[in-house]
Each structure stands twice: as structure tokens, then as C-alpha cells.
Length: 72
Length: 296
Image (cartoon, rainbow over all chains, first blue to last red; front, side, top):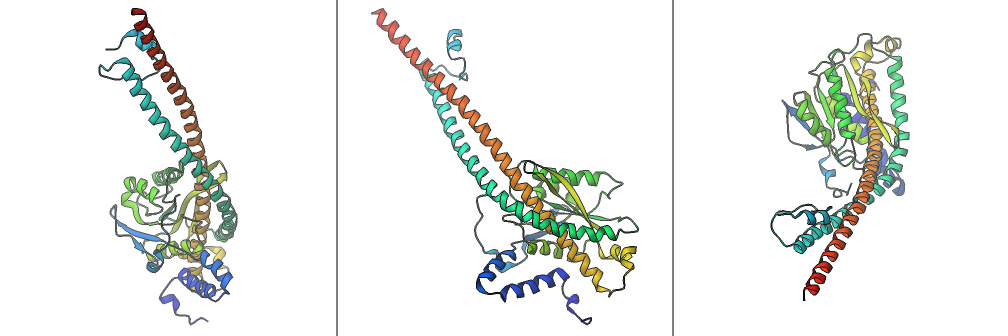
């Protein structure tokens, strides 16, 4: 489909992650649990200006309330 | 003041200040040694358990690394066949490390490699933007290359890195608005279970990809080069993340192994010292009692 307009809104990586999430959610229960583990990310990032870091922002704000910190 | 003979008797003790009687001084030093022994024993237990944990994590991390390397090698095949005509002028450095410490020289190895790459002015512009994954290298590099830092990421590497992590990082890099011609990923390459070394991987951007003759030989729609550049960046970051994770677990295991061995040596030396001190105290008491008895 050469008239895809998703490129105006997000990058290819985001597009791939969305489709992957759809596939994972459509699996049967046991496979879905195993696949969900592969899609977990708790990424945080911060922008830097002139040697000073900005505020840290979660990429997926609802997913950050997970387990506490493991020992190491 | 210290008497020469007492110094000879208690040669192994640390001299303490003050005019406490001999036995009291022995007891104080003995208590110190006892406390040190207890704390070193606790440390040895902790480092031994950390070594066990790191060993089990290493096995899993190595399996993930073998799988992840396939992504990386498939990725680099594209760039082998499409070398850019003009060398890239503005490089973006992505430094891969992690948030946790106690893993030997992992973070400083990557930070040093980045600083070296930026110092060679023929290889890279000293004002090249730098993005760091992992708090430890972020701390090291922000002191030296603070002006070059564009973005930093953390919360990666607690468990095996997923492709979702790598895709998120690549997404943020592309959307950040930083200008670059190519991306250089600096990470730790897994040489063996006991050694690693810093290495780099280059990823070209859409612009340079489109201009290269290997790419131009094919007829395709406009957007594909952009998609390919973004996806191959995520691929390369994923391969670097899993390999760096495996290196970190192996380095942590080695560091904790060395720490346990050192702790064991210290326990041996301190136990000897403690026993000598204990026996010296007993001998002094005996001498006092005997001289006291012979004076009667």
C-alpha cells in the first residue's frame, strides 16, 4: 500500500512495536505470557542541554510500576 | 609510652595511643581484630553469593547474546554492500553500558574508548553528539564530555535487554532532532568468559544509504531507505545491548570471584593475627601471675 500515512506520525520502529504488540496480544494464553516477556521495556530517558540533564521521562508511563529493584 | 620489650612481644599489633595498661591494650586491639574478622566474613559471604548469581545470569545472557549476534551480523551485511561514497562527517556516538556497578572495568572501558575516539580529530569532530545508555557511563562521561551529551537512557540491563528496549532507544534517537551522518555504537565485545574489549559498530543513515552506489542499483520507493535506516539502527543497538549485557555479567562474576578470594586471604591473615594476640595476652597474664606469686 503506497498510500500508507503512518509515516507522518511515527517511525518504522514504533510501527513495528505496535504490530508486534498486536500479534502478542492475539496469541493463546501460555504463548502470550511467554511473548509478553519479550516486549517488556522500562526505558527512561533524559535530554541534555549544555552539560546539564533534563528531567527523566518514562517511555511507557503505565508500565513503570513493576517489580522493585532486584539485588544485582 | 611504648616499652621496647612490649613492642617485641606484640609485634603484630597496631600501636595505639594513650597510656592504657598492657592487658587493656591487648584486649582493645583483640576486639578490633575480632570486629574486622566478623565484617570481612560477612563481605566474603555477600561476594560469594553475588558471584553465584552472576554465574547463573551469565549462562542465560550468553545464550541471548548468541541469538542477538545474528541480528547484528545480518545488519552489518547491508552496510558492507552499501559503503558510502563520501565518509560521514558528523558522527553520533551511542555508548552502551548499564546502571549497576560492582562489575570491574566495564563502564570505564567504554567511556575511555569514547573519549579516545573523540580525541582523534581526524576520526571524529570533537563536538560530536554523544548519547549514553546506562547511568554509570553517564556519570563518567558527563564530567568530561558534558557539552557533547545529547540524551541519556537508563533502566536497561536489569534483565536481558529486549528488542523493545533497542527499538525505543532507536526511536528516540531518530526523533531527537540531533543531526548526524552516521551512528557509531561503542560497546563491550565478548571475547571470552574472562575477557572483553571495547569495540565500535557503524550504522549509516538514510541519506548516506540512498547515495551509495550499491543502493542506487535497485529501483524502489522513497520511504524504504528511511525505514531500513531506522530498523537497522534498532538492530545494531539490540546486538550491542545483549553483548554488553553478557560482558557485564561475566565481569561481575570475575570481580566477585576476586573479591571472595581476597576476602578469604584477609580472613586467614586476620585469624592468625587474632590468635597470636590472644596467645600473647594469655602469656602476659601468666607472667604477671607467676611473678606476683614468686614475690610472695
